[in-house]
Image (cartoon, rainbow, N blue to C red):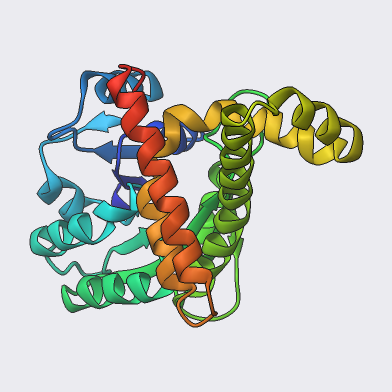
Amino acid sequence: MMERRIGLIGAGEMGSGIGGLLVSNGLEVWTSLGGRSAASAERIRRAGVTVVDGMPAIAGSCAIVLSIVPPDRAMLVAEEFAAAYRRAAEPALYVDCNAIAPVTARAIASVITAAGARFLDAGIIGSSPRDGYDGPKVYASGPDVAEFARLTAHGLQVRPLEGGIGVASSLKMCYGGLTKGITSIGTAMRACAEHNGVAELLATEFSESQPALNAWLNRQIPTMYPKAYRWVAEMQEIATFGEAEPGVAAMYRGISDLYAAIAETMTAKGSV
């Protein structure tokens, strides 16, 4: 039954996690593993997601298609979907769940709707589904948000937002800009303290005068390193989002450069 079949573009930690959540709550989820790693294939296997042969199977047989990929691939996979899509009696709903700027979301919407499908803007806040955790939340905006919100009955926390395409993306940009921005500042200043021989002094003072922020950074920074490569393009999207505000774009391009440097170091160490 096509109405109970969800297409999934993206077999990463978040995509496979959401796919597994929907499968465990009674839906059939299809994905393609073309070009994906053995680790991705194993995640999808554990999640119970059905592997099909390429984008045409997803584009032609799924009522709702979720795109959950790195930001710099969001347009590429949308174009691939559009090329494979054939207008159905009830046009498929393509939900872009990626960390992209509103202007990027609107550009992708044009590609999808030109192919005859429908488009919904969404942003994921939180980590991948796991036992004992009721997240993540998926904020969504656009004319077909009520249809997507039906997935709440299948375990996905959909939070509908009033307004059109770009509202959900704006919220995601602001939230990610705060959390990943603060993490980058903490990382940068701790590195500077280490380089200048005051790391222990900074740690002591910060734990005394900023205990809440210190505890948050102590949780966030260690988990950032293996994910830094995924945040490079997101910071570029936030830079685009903040172009109208003085200094914002330059600041987030700098943060993107920081995460790129961390990612390069991690790759050199064989840690990614």
